[in-house]
Length: 129
Image (spheres, rainbow, N blue to C red):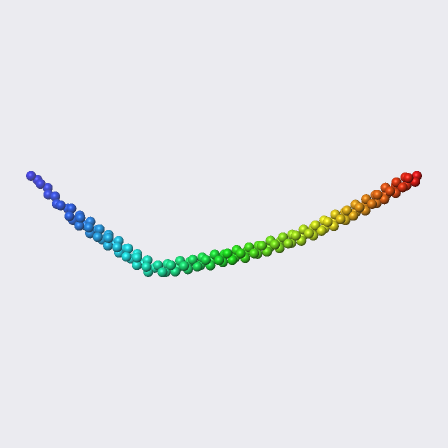
């Protein structure tokens, strides 16, 4: 009879798996420790950098707000000046138009008076004849 012999390989596999698990846990713990230490050491610098960035953003926004307010005031002044100028020009044109209408009305009145006088004269001449 030919018997094959099998060796029990279960025990070495378990030992290798336990060794791999042990190394993994050691690596995991070391990584967590290194991350914690780095976080504690770098946190004040990060906080200071963020605070500095916030301050710069606040100053930039305030500067932009001031610039916008200055431009608004400048535009308001320009528009006000333009409106005043247009009002003056409109009053001048209105005055000229009114003067022309008055002169035209005076001319019509004079012609109407002359025509009335001519009619009266013609009527008087016709009555005498």
